Image (cartoon, rainbow, N blue to C red; front, side, top):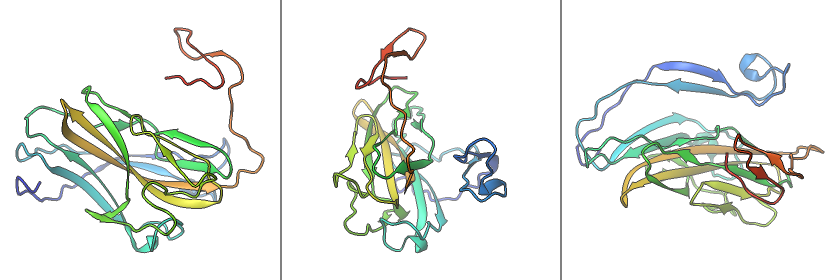
Length: 239
């Protein structure tokens, strides 16, 4: 916090490791000694006391380096991964940060529609606004995109455009080539019109050739919850 003139480092112990590799039953990922791409979620946790009520708390983490095979950024192999959350507790009120619902494991298929929600749970009832953000290598230092990619066009697509809904975090497009692209999403929470916090998601999207595998589609009315609410092709629903 610049306002409170506080700049400190906190050590967080690791409390859990979870293998979340996207593999089929019987397959073995690189996390368990296999050859298929593997992913783990490492959870670090601690309790700390803030030095005061300030409008500009920043909690950040950085580690070097990113994948050298990333295709939408300049010199990714020499850039650190950096993400942060922000807190404005100047009012003295308690606050729970928004929590993203979907896991941070993203694959897409060439020439197939890609739709994923980056929506959050907001326990305090605050209003949430979403936005795409430039990936960072350090605080306030963005990673430069490689042309033709930009903040609002981070992936190569069939329509040369990407759709992002700022009200629910829905990211939609159809990729046209294999690629590995960086993208960041920020969920900002407002209370009575005042920004009280932000969380940043640092993402990487892998676009691969899925062959003849096609996404599941809904072509008839089905029951999706215990109230019997139906959903049919072409309609949206909430879970």
